[in-house]
Length: 285
Image (cartoon, rainbow, N blue to C red; front, side, top):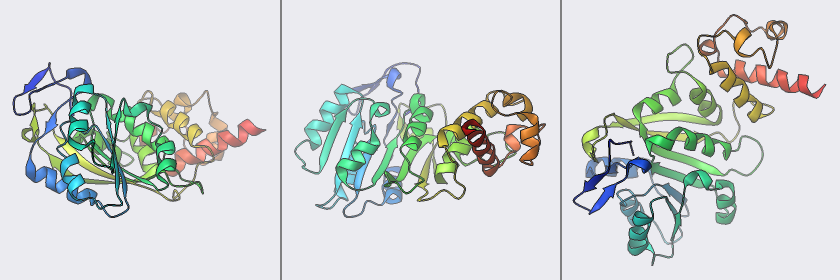
């Protein structure tokens, strides 16, 4: 899950944890049970596990599945994928994808499944934030079919704190705004380094993300919202006047009742949406 100082041989499994994949293998039975309980696999669910590794979560999840369940496993490490194929390849409910989760079209996967996906995994630290944004892009907030029903992830605790951060806090940023635009964010519990092999240097945490069927406040174009938020937080010490000057002028911010002298970290998500929607209107003129 987390980046290590080098490759580490997991003697119990005979697999070398690879630094480039950020591999730290979950091994604590109590924590594993709590995670599976939090996911709560139900009949007819179509689940997707990102980075199953040595199947610490995969095995108990499969044990909880019914005959009508489906489980897609996405594993980038070919050696680990081969082990997963040996363990679960004969199970008709299980499909194994060898590759990078960043290359997976979750919308297409949901269409094939004909049902929203339930996504979970012990995410590598080195791709966790890009992967979250990739998944958010597949999260629907309009009348289009729902792609993802929910997500349960093991992440670095700092990342979970950033996801759940509120305006005015030091951890509030682009990840906070965009995750909370698409999803309810529920931090569940911490997972200490001792639960992994090799042990990471940081505390981990489990988070539940529940995509909105309809966002509380809707951006006309979520891509514009992301551009606004990204620019506003690019240099946190800059005011909106300076951070967004290439996108909207001071007079327009005043007209929206937004202080051009404010910093991005003080704005509510609804205010970012107001700015993004105004930019969309201006661009259509």
